[in-house]
Length: 280
Length: 275
Ligand SMILES: Nc1ncnc2c1ncn2[C@@H]1O[C@H](COP(=O)(O)OP(=O)(O)OP(=O)(O)O)[C@@H](O)[C@H]1O
Ligand SMILES: [Mg+2]
Image 1 (cartoon, each protein chain N blue to C red):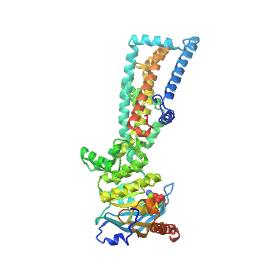
Image 2 (cartoon, rainbow over the protein chains, first blue to last red):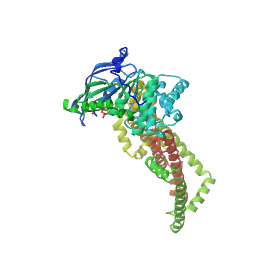
Image 3 (tube, chains in turn green, orange):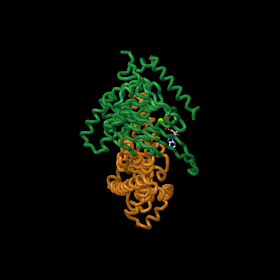
Image 4 (spheres, rainbow over the protein chains, first blue to last red):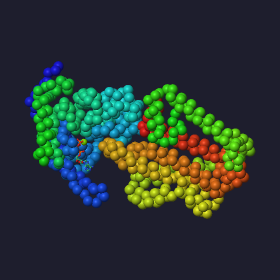
């Protein structure tokens, strides 16, 4: 059970993989206004960022703080307009938010006047689904994230971990093919985080979603993903894409940490991130 | 347990303390309150009897006067008249304040076109224009209605607008991320998020509406509780004068408490749990 299955290259081993999300040539420059609103300077945050994410794959974006991970993810969701480049989902270019992509925010960002169930229903309600149908759907999803009992409670009555699960259920409710997650577990304590990481893997196995996951936690990235995209900073660009040799059933994270291969990969990524400022 | 604490922050702090030591202390607070009320009334009664009745009345005297005024129907008539002005003017102020506040908070251009006027009028002690209003509308009901309205409308308007402006951008992002239309973002996010601010504005508006009502009745001096105060003041019947004053106090407390309860009810997440 503790044995780690090693493969040469998971993705190459399965060439039939279909590209789900294709990001290419993304550039984004923010204009910074002074306090008096007069002069403005320009801050290039993303430069020519491109990568593919395959169907059913979990890909992590990792990089030092401020390198543009959130900006990139928000761009893909359509919350920020990019200057150039294209984002394609299933080969179709997307320019604004759509139900093909579900977003999980770093802060749970639940609507405080809605119960857990009503929060999960939010996206469905916007689509005009009938009340009975969406309530049923929301209950199923709450059960999926382990919160079936808390459906009628308000966010302020729930813990941070529970709120984050509701955020996940809300994103899953619209049945997106891609989940974009921005450091969803970073505000949680270590135990809760580990529980939710396991939950996410279980849910991913169950729902077969494609996941693009931002994190600054190396262990989390290695534990959850098939591939890791390391971003360099100032401006943000793809530095290296690492394909992880772990496939299928993963042992628990504490067990994995003891694996020499895990440690080697971890050290490698750590070097990449640390050397980033020197390269720019 | 928080019914007579009128400021949101104080409520939260109060609840926090009570949550730390549940059970008996709540009762003890009430006991302290009761003792303090009885003590003040007793001191007033004793001290009030020493003073020339022209300058001060004492509780038992006021109760007698109240009994007389209730029996003659005078108090009820004045009370109903005041309530009519207050309620109607206040409802109009809430409707107009919320509607204008939503527009001003939502649209930059409307804001730019009106903010100087709104701020100037809000800062002006508007009771100062009462004589002018009486010139416009005469001494009747419309003048009083207008004064109540103009005093109460600005707190409602300003709080509503700032509620709309201050909706957390994270919540707007949620709408955008789930492909909400502009209308859906307004209806399902901005409006409910601004609701507690509206309620705060409405609560603040009540105090000003009551002030407006009394001032208007002072000036017109025909009917209502304000006119009653003027009448008994002119007749040097101090005890009788206190009766409408206490009525006004009661009105303010009751209305503000209701508004505060309502505030809790529409936005329970802003306050610590009562359970
Ligand atoms: N709306 C904005 N206007 C101007 N600059 C911005 C804006 N949003 C982000 N930035 C800048 O872009 C850079 C990248 O920010 P971003 O939030 O994408 O970083 P991040 O990689 O997510 O960092 P972290 O790991 O700390 O969350 C930062 O330097 C930030 O100051
Ligand atoms: Mg970020």
